[in-house]
Image (cartoon, rainbow, N blue to C red; front, side, top):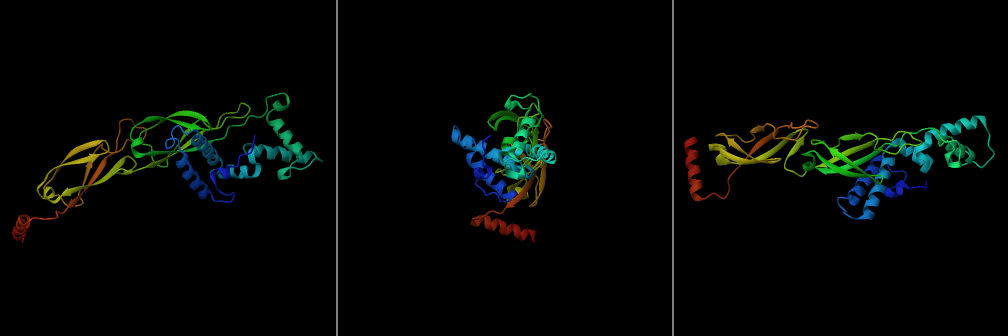
Length: 297
């Protein structure tokens, strides 16, 4: 297996913090994301490399193994255990390799692990579970208003997944068996997808509830009337009571966001009225308001 410098792929040094690695990954993932680079094979290849590097370096335990064992980091623990056992029982005179273990120790380890398959041995060997894979999926709020399917490319393999309506920003879901391939017939690892959901709508979301502020003109607030307001999936007509006060809140039941994995169930939409004062009054309007002021006093 050729050595791949994951630090170089992310454009960071070996001694950067976990936060710097995450920052570098997000910046590059946005730049080379397939949705932003359609039919660009080079960008697609770069995106795969970035994800692979992040899967290793964003996990502190994996990063430590990678720093110590390089391209053999996935099998660092069993290699270390095997090498320690062999050191107790044997003294090798061959040249010592990285980490204080001999080349012979290293060869024996892989022969044991793969059952001697590489050298025509007996086959079988120890089974290892595949590596778990972490991926980040960027969506906007409208994309998660309805359940839909999407194809992800993970380690060169296309995976068709269903994204449930109502998934939240930062939420992580697990797809069992869609991670790294197992070794020697071992089980595959799992795929963990973290959702990053942007919101450029006029609504503030809190789980399944939505919140919005709506302008209400002074005259309708005083006398009552009808107001058309936006919901997340269309407009509705609201009846405004006379003498409605600024900051009044109303609840539109079932007009919020879908509840996660609860088909057909929705939260509520909470509307806050913000009364607007008229400007550029005509002389007649000023006279009428002055007359009203006299009546009120």
